[in-house]
Image 1: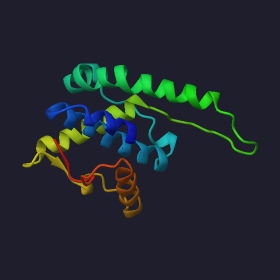
Image 2: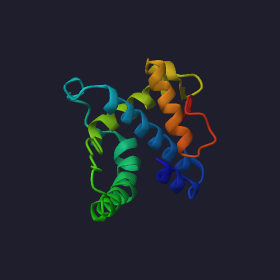
Image 3: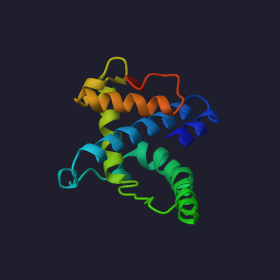
Length: 151
């Protein structure tokens, strides 16, 4: 997330806001991956290629910036000399269905809001998840609060 927000600094206006939204949704997805068991998040979701925001804007960002960055980082990790006793594990690196589902939820809630924003209570996370989200967002070096998310 920190490296993704660094890309935001190079952008201005609506693109910057869109990239910040993408990072916020990524962090919410991370909370779901951590706290919702796999069998509880195995579901059919909407077709995102039919959704303009995803297919025209976020899809290309993921394709041209996030996936190459992820591949580079995984390649770098694969070449590291790992000290004995240390084990690297990865799972659920990127679940596009879950990410898209969260993104569509966030946009839908914002569109229904008078201020075009999403507050923490829209997710009904426990305090420990809210605290973890705040901590992760702080680690990205953003000066903004995580919630409310403004679109």
